[in-house]
Length: 433
Image 1 (cartoon, rainbow, N blue to C red):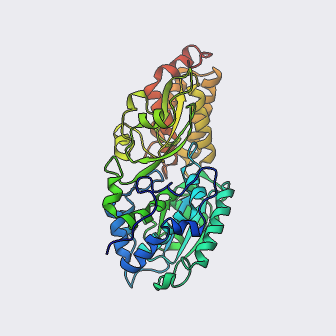
Image 2 (cartoon, rainbow, N blue to C red):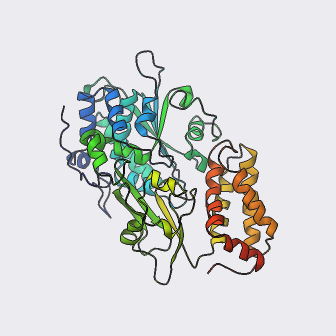
Image 3 (cartoon, rainbow, N blue to C red):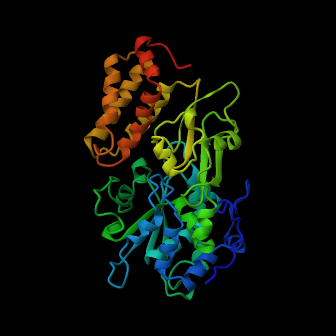
């Protein structure tokens, strides 16, 4: 069955309905632009497993940071008459990664797109209930989502017997108390259950035993927003608008001392140099690029030598970092790198959930050493302790990925700029220039 034509831009589908300075499309405007056609098509012409198969064929990878194939994640949920009930879908909108604001753009710019994507995901795994887990500080987004949810419910897109299909699904907004660890899916689930936000051991994975012990999928806001476009335009179209083997577009953001900080929807795999120079306008006058975090604060620094890399999951991984959220944080040649690191490690130490000792105590220790270096009181022994911590807090040494991510900026800075650390010990008052 051929899907109905899509009225939104087939080149930049995620942001096509957004108009700078104007409110987001309400239900009628969203429908006029082709909204909810993907849901109507799926309910009428596709089996639930057919939606999952489409998403799997599209090469959509999770946009929250890990980059796990979305269709593969959904396919792990038990299906059939004997599958456990209830099942849940959750949107992770607890966007607390420093320098990252892409989900806020989508929530405030086109809330019905997220809602339609979540209904399609629920249909794919036959979920009964969904939650949008939203960062508490996103008050504008919360108001817009509340209004959009009411519109969708009144129009018959949510609730019982959706569009006469026999499919039932309820979707609720939950504003969080705000903890960085809630970006980790099992900590988010614990928080949603009213418990302390700490990660859980895996397996079992949430697809088998998630919210209240029932099958659950947790995906990022941007991930869900891609789903209506895949269903309406097909998997091959989704792959065709990418410049890499990862399907689709990506909302790339740039913060730091560039001429035009912001966020842009571009084909997945757009070269980093093109994002920084053509879209962000390059560095401000008198400044040079020193290094950059490619995917948020919990990724390894890359340097000018990496500017021509295509910005996709595998290319950035081969360069020794992670694509993460795809939000670039630029550090210029006049900014004190030790100060940048101290600021980052302060954030991560403060946001440790405290569940395991290496993370709880190690990150605070790292922050204290960086403060000493910044104030000119560091010693050669401090540098060796920092090097040891980059290993002791690495992957496999802590309960979850918080500390390994937190230590990535430090380990990469010590690799690319060892002279900066050694100069602080030899000539303590020297600053980066």
